[in-house]
Structure formats: structure tokens, C-alpha cells
Length: 281
Image 1 (cartoon, rainbow, N blue to C red):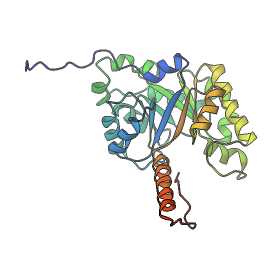
Image 2: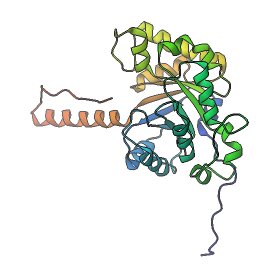
Image 3: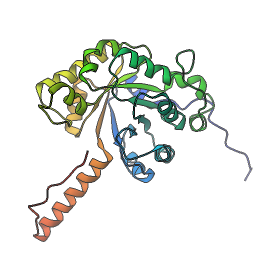
Image 4: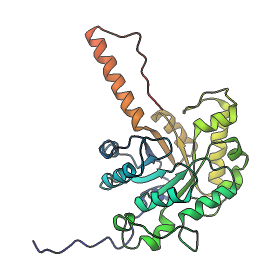
């Protein structure tokens, strides 16, 4: 052994998603709600382009988020974090921990979109506080000088107010994309006519999704959609979406377990007509 230490990466590790989108490549995303590093590794090993750690509705806190970001570094996936809300501390800590992009829920107007951008960019482009404690090591020495152009700033449009202010949101300088939250969007647009979910065929919801997509395309930013199946994701990619979430870790787990239990009961001749699989959120 020479005893020579491996040096830090000099140039910041590039954001794979940005390059894929620039090349016109559709990207597959997995949604992580389980706060466990090994569970995240299992998902990352399946070939996804990106993962989103859900700090809003997922069962994980900061420590679990950090553990997942550390445990998945070896995989060729781009890690994003959905923060709980439009709050600068949570947004900046997610990036300092290693997120290569932040998805912020419930962005309803231009002022909120501008605030989101400001929290994510170092001066002079924003007001992000300097202190990249972990990502300054994991991403490379030049992180501070390249983060503004590499870290993805993505707003969620998922309310009636957001739809009303769609154009002013998508044209916000510094915004990289929109993530469509179909469940909350449905609650906001249909006044209870439809239950929250995904993979809608309802004409009103599909029209709203396509309207957001069109606005993103006109503004030159990425369009992302939360789906619940490969079939719907393929349809959405055909419409022109850049990124589609195939499903969450919890739903992948529930679906696989349900299939195995059902098959085993059938083979044993002990089918349970009373049981209905519960896929969770």
C-alpha cells in the first residue's frame, strides 16, 4: 500500500437528469416513502433514473433522509427530495445533505415560485445560505461554484389556485420544472367528484394535466408526473412528459406481496374471498 489518499472529486458530479432531459430521454422515477437505507438500495438497484425522498408524507425524518442519500450514492440514480413545505430551512438542509433537486409542494403563485428559487440558489441568483456540509464532500470540491446550474428546482402545481396562476408560475426565472400532483389537483378541481389518486382517465383531470404539460413546454422547463403504473407512464411520456414516477416503494412492496399471497392461496386451495389487498398511499 502506498498510503496515498484518494483526492476529492474536483468537478461537481453532474446532474444526470439534466443531461437526460437535454437529450430528450424519458426518465423513470421511484417515490420513496419508507425511511430505510436498505429498502432504498433495493429500489435503486432496479434501474430507475431518479428517486424522490418524500419528506412531506413519507415516514422519514432528517436522519433517515440522510441515511438514504448516503446509502444510495453508489447507484446511478439522481436523488431528489420532496420537502414538507415552502420553508427555507428544510429546503436548504435537504440540499446540504445531498439532494440534487428539490420538489416543493403547493406552489400556488409567482411569489411562492420566486421564493422557492431564491432558497435554492446561492447569491447572486438567490439567498441560499452557504454550508454544504455533506454534499460538498460527496459531490465534489467545485460544488459551491456549480450548484446553481446543477441543482434542480421543481415546483408542484396541485391546486385550483395553482392552475389559475399556471402561466406566471412556469415562467418564473430559475425554475427547472413542474411536478404534477394529480391527487391534490383532483381534490382542488373536482370538489369531491373524484377521489384522490393517480392514472386518471377523467377528461377534466387529463385536460388539466395536459394544460400544465403544454405550459411547461412553452416555457422550456421540464414536466414531471406522478403515475401509478408503467402503462400510464408510457402514455404520459407519449404526451411529452420528461419524468414519470412509476410508483412508490410502499406500493411496489404491497403489490408484490399481494400477488405472492394470492398465488400461494390458490395453489393450496385456500383462497380467501374476504381479503382485499390494501396497496396503501
